[in-house]
Image (cartoon, rainbow, N blue to C red; front, top):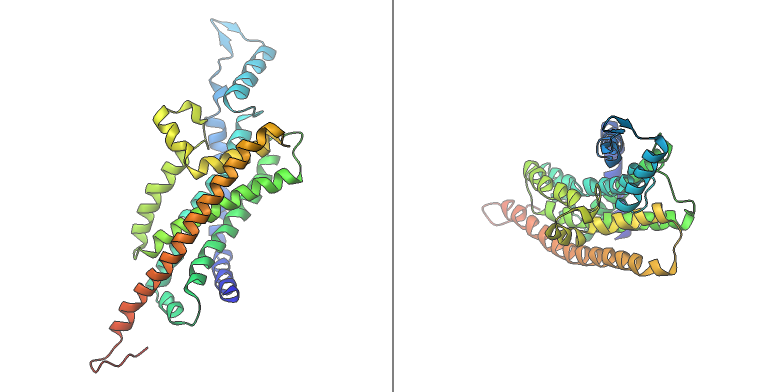
Length: 304
């Protein structure tokens, strides 16, 4: 199954690379989110420079801003540092949302039926879509991470940030990408029209983004929305990423929370991937059966 999965994964990646516009838009969109939302949503911009006609000294203003950031945004030195973790997870969410889009097009142009008729494991079809989506999303996250480091007023890493923190950050992103791409690919298998897929994706991905800690702390949400955000896998991946970026090296007291977030994502991935891959294999077989039936001639001979 490995060789078949690899061949189909390479096919998906080649289609992506050979369409430069897709690659460009995929990189520019999160940059715009960082630049536009990082400036527009920065809460320190709401602090007036003067009160009752009196100018606030720069030193006092900076202390107020730092206090707000420290208390509200978990000690982030600026809002973009807080936002960057959310943007990295947003990249994976948006990529995963359309992970099954190629299945819809493959079905429309008949390539999926050729794959189903070929002597290859059905799981390799599903797995190739998931792996190609993970690769594209992780590549974009990697580029945006380093871009956020070099822009003025951008991402500021903890002074104790090291290679292990970097690895831990991207392991959390990988788990999120695996779970989300598996779920959205499973949805796409049941859809025959591209328009239907877009409608369903937009119905799911934006609420998942905004009902998480990507843009603002969960503590600023109503209590009922906090309960929803706390079970959102996006929130767990964001908190893992944000922890490594802002806090850096671990302390003994922080192992529990971090282990819980990793375990939550691992269970999410395992449940989604295992259940969906089995159902998808059966679903693909069901998709092939009507095609086989329709190709029989009037005497009952199967033309396949």
